[in-house]
Length: 445
Image 1 (cartoon, rainbow, N blue to C red):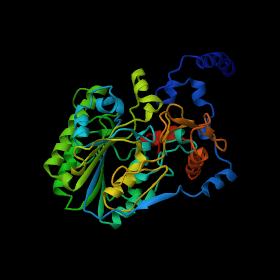
Image 2: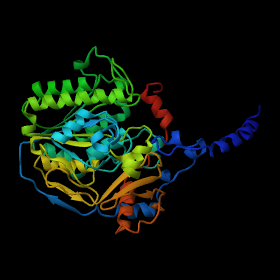
Image 3: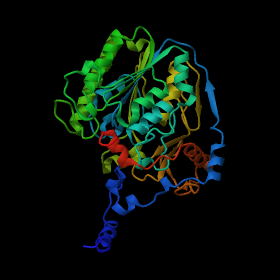
Image 4: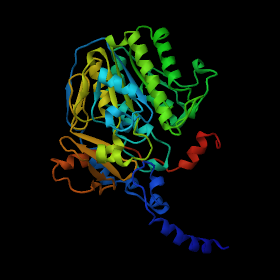
């Protein structure tokens, strides 16, 4: 059959797909949109004009207030639990009760009552947590695997401050560090030591996705490092888990979403107990959070209880002797607040602005929280201090704009300018997703 005739016959079918009922509450856009909509040019990939981009790049950073904290000998561990979400916790949402151990730790120590991820993927969560930047998509971002392009440095010279003040920085994960160039990116940021599941400690253990030996094995290995390799140094350690990544495979055990999170919860509780037994919390702080909300459907109850910002809601728990009995910390907070918070906990200079707060040390609530949406990728969710429901900004090159004018928000142009300023500094990435994916799996040179 001639190709032209095939195309002619297929076109009505593709147009028909445009009008099928669509589920708008799932972060994988190609799963909730029809074929045509997912592949039409989108505002998220519309480039700025040269003149507009230059004007945005010339704008100054938002004004900040910097505070010098009293020097101390504390250490900080940041635990990033894959897909950890508010809806899985009874304490954080009133919905599922899959994390009773984490809830008990939150009650014993402290937790942020309203905490937001700045993106919807693992790389976006790591960008926000470790660089302090919102993971806004550069042009062609969602058609490429160059996920860390433009995010090679951390705000506030974070890793330089750690090194200059004798803080040894480490990164432990049970995920393959070679995936998506994570190892190279982490090294460039300034981590002193990195380790993945290839370490001999995990030899002969059953594996899950991304070569994962399981959360329990990761915590056991890290405790072994603390006991035998830390060498008395002050540390900033990041632990990144992977067992709760879809398809929720617990190595050598029962799989499924609930089973994976109950396993992760038990492993986390035992990890905290082991740190308590070592008296880590007398001079150390553990921050437990997620990389993003789970890539699963939002339920009607979740939307009703958590509102339009539900796709961004994740837990954040703070463990340390100074936080015993503190319980819920009110306010709205986000992943990009971690760098100022860690600096304060370590007794180093820490800066805050309207767009970046601090929940450790002297708490400063950010005025704006920004979340790059996964469902409607042309939009940024904007949570404004003092307003219950979020607003939305449409990404569209020079015509980036509010979805509907937020008359209640003062200085609304400040938000648009900051989104445009940050995106204008990002390079346009090459749209070569298929080829790069083949390279990752060594199917092409």
